[in-house]
Image (cartoon, rainbow, N blue to C red):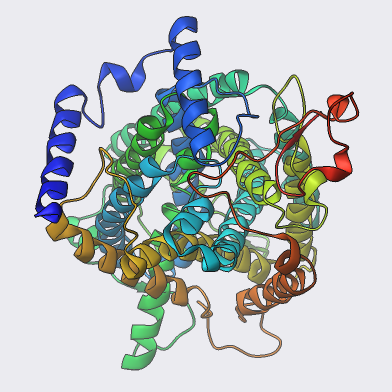
Length: 594
């Protein structure tokens, strides 16, 4: 009887919620907060955060639209498609696999997003999946479970920053070539990536409402860029003298293999097609970004899960349009890959094409060559601008999970990394810890022979880090079935809750395993086809395990749980005042403002 009443209450609350506001496209979702509503909302949200066991130390100054903008810009479907369209997308299976794997991935990710939104609405905090894990499991297992989940999410976010920085440098080089200038040498691209990471880190030191304004602009720019690419490419490709538009059978049923695996052998063909699915996984990596911004968002228990769901919807729609558009404009894959050589009259040989080295850039330039060449160059520079905006948002989100992890004492020197600088109310040390780690990842590309393998490892680390960290709280919620889990506006129907959870776990953990396998073959000691992700993950596992054994096992108590006494956030300038405890007497876990 109690269970029936509880389910009825959940249904009534969910129905009332959707009558008041839709998930997408309502005034509540896009309204700009006024000072009075911000003050009232901030007090309510701060009280809710106190109930979660933390005091408000970050500045709560963005609304639901800005929260969604950060998530949509961080996932950045335009730049993500451009980054992996050639490899592993086109190389491992070609058009049909790209289209249908993305459709399947979109379907599964929408389900995952709704499952995660229910948990996010119950526990809106900067720790996101890391914090949720500690609430779901029994208290004695909370430190270890949250530590494992937090490390995976931390790795995914950190690798995502490095991937965007490396992609920015590569596309900047291609944009210069498309504009008639010399390319940036591969070694110099690493230093360009490090420089842009430094710029992103410095820009993230602004107060959150100023940063949110930049992200709102970035989200509008991203949508406009997608529309320009789709409309511009299709319009120019259909003009006389252009490359033409591909047939539907090529886009939805075409096959291509440039991976080095022998597709006449059924086992190898199945293997290369499985590796091609990594293309779609990466496109949704980081969609939980709005949840990480919960402690800086007004009405966080509604706005953060809404931002998470809308990020997935927007990514699915935008990604499908982009993939279809680029495939319809793909005319000759070897030429676009730079694999066709022509002999000039003087006997010298050169590559047919624009020699930019990036397949998507070649599509832009070939498609617009006869009708509007300037448009193709403009589209390349638009992608570069969107790369910059995506990396800026990615560093912002990574800084929040790092801050949340350090706030609870998970790292060595956690008290320093969790510092919040006043009056900015920004976790600046956490942001620059990310910068240091991203530089270490980018330096792996300095080896010219293994640079491509290092970049593939970064992409794989990003995908697997996010997927496993998403799957852990979903799996534990299925297993532990917490009795005190609150009713939220995003509650899933009781008949669908378990099937959705099982499907989410199968997809997240199953696709993560694909990232460990080399996409190109055959694999030998000297051909650079080895997938070094297993080595990188093993190294990180050793570091995390040693940190747990010698540091975190003794000091890390896990995130605060619902109902705990709020953890301290005492300004250092007051720590030695009369009647105040010494800084050495304060708990090691907790954010400190200076």
